[in-house]
Structures are given as structure tokens and as C-alpha cells.
Image 1: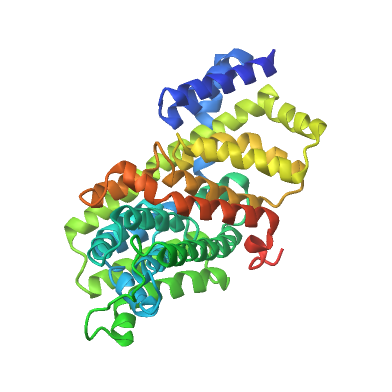
Image 2: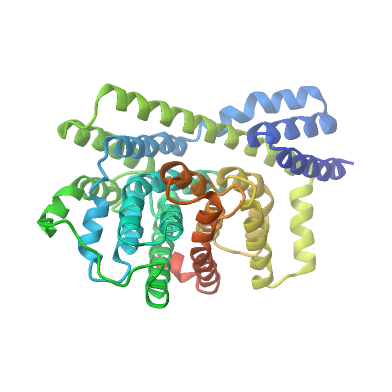
Length: 433
């Protein structure tokens, strides 16, 4: 009877999500309802009383608001504003140099942000108008920035990776190291797309080199991006060098961003208030989903569904590639309708036991998962990055045109996913496992 309740719970959860019920509410209500049916009201109340504290008391989770605060301070004070101009200096000799510069500027912004939405919004305001003025087709310019924004969740610090690491009980530092290779591979694949389009379709991407404003030198570019270089060196040098934990690195990064902003007179009370409020609201939303997912995990475990699925997969015996094809298809479909955190935390209770049976590295799977979830940020009908770009540059392209503009980048993403599956070293080479 318990296992039947577990499967009914899964079905009800899917229905609630399809009805656009908030992910956290759907997870918590299904978990409480299922446990009540199996063991009674007292047990479900005990679960509700104990599980939120048990989840929130994980010290590593305190890295989430710290890195978020660092990113929001950098975003609102414009510390990353010089990244695009600096990238233009480096890539101006290439065809499609403006678009390539925007991709690598997005990668630089990701190093102090951790959010693909914020990355797309920041770069969109700066780069899209300049690309359109330089003769780029508006839909492709918007698509470039929307795709480039997804790098924000791959290059550390990544909030998705922190939450995954806590939930899967793996090293946050190793997750960050694994994400670097995939972030670089993604940026290079987007660069190849831009170069090919500029070669075969100069009406979409001009072949001529990028112009940089007169008098803008390499020295000026370095001066403009020194806050990002300083923060990145401090945070990741300390983290990967073993001097900081993830939480300490986040705290140092947030303090560093505030101090640099104050020294440059960029931070006032209004911007500080905005950064803090956005940090609080985003953290609260993530943590309540995490609480719901942890309660749902208990429900699946008590009902026996998680073990049943693991045994069913073992009995079926799919090959590694067959299993990965199923996982990729599931997450690509979820990405069409769900935001990344919800899709991740709804499915982890089911998938983690399966991958443990297959002796697959949970670090590797986590990085692959983040890549798959970020593809959902630029796929219709609810690709969040697309709507962000529509909001900041709607005068240049319609929603449908922006979705068309990311098509080639989606193909590049699928190639990167294939390479990650076939060559796990792309993720693991910096970790050493």
C-alpha cells in the first residue's frame, strides 16, 4: 500500500506542477499528505517540525546568500561594466568580435555573479544596442546575450551548484572546479557558432573587425576590470587554494565587493538596500524549495518508491549511454516548463540513488545537470533568459525573434552535452578524481 501511495504522490506532484502551483508548495503538500496517509497525522507533523531545521542547519548553505550578495552588489554598482569594453579589445580582430566579446564578458561577469538571469540582464543592456548599431541582426544579437547568460550558472560561483552540492552531499569546491571546464567549453562552442555565422551569413553577423572607441587601450581595459580581477583572485584563489571554505569565500567576496564599491563611490544606500532585499528574497525562495525537496525525499524513501525505481532500473539494465539519453531527454523536457531549481530538486530524490547504483560520480552528474538545466533557460515557452532579454531590449526584437536567435546556440549546447557524456574528463580533469 505504501508504494502505491508513493506513486500516487508522484502523479499528484506532476499534476500540481502542470497547474503552475509553486514548486515548494507542491512538494511540501504532497510529502505531508503522503506521510499522513501512510503513518498518520502525528508523524507528518513531526516531519514538518524537524525537516526544515535539519535542512537549513547545513552550514554550507550559508554560502548561498553570501555569493548572491556579492553578485547583486556588483550588478547594481556596475563593477562589471568594463568587461564588455575589455573583451572588445581582445577580440576586435575577429569577425563577429562584438558577439564574441559579449560571450566572454558574460563569462567574466559569471565569476562574480552566479546567476544566469542577472548575467543576461547586465550584458543585454550594454552589448545589444552596440551590436545592433554595428549591423548585427537584432534577433541574433539578443540570442547571443541570452545564451551567454547561461554561462553564469556554470562558471563559479554557481548558486545551482551550491544547492546541488548540499543536497547530494558532495564537495562544493569540486563542483566549482568541474564547472570551469564546462563553462569554457560552452563559451568556445558559442564562439564557433558566431564565427561560422559571420563566415556564411554576413548579413546576420558582420565580418569586419570590431571597432573600439578611440583611445581605449589595453591599459584602460585592465583598469576598468580590476574590481572583477581582484574579487576573482581573492575569492577563488582562497577557495581553490584551500584557505577558505565555500561559505568563507562567499563572505570574503561579498565584503570585498562592498569595500570596492565604497572606495569607488559607487555604492549608496539605495543600491545597498536593493542588493540586500534581492539577496533576501532570492535566498528565501531557494531555501523553501530546498525544504520541500528534502521533505519529498523522505516521503519517497518511506513509501519505497526510490528503492523500487532503483531496483527497476537495475533489473532493466540499461547501458550507460541509454541511461544518459533518458536523463538528458527528461531534463530537456522539464526545462521547457520549469525553472532550474524546481526541476533539479523535484528530480534529485529519484535520480541520485540510480546514479549511485551505476557508480557514476555525483560531481560529474551535478555539473552535467546544471548544464542541462541552463539549456532550459533559453528554450520555449518559459525560457527565463529570453524574457529577461525581451525586457531589457524589447525594442530590437520580439519574443519569437529572440527564440529564433538562440536556435544555433541550442545546437551548440547539445554538442557540449554530448561531449560531457562521452568525455567525462571535461568535468573531472581539474578535480583529479
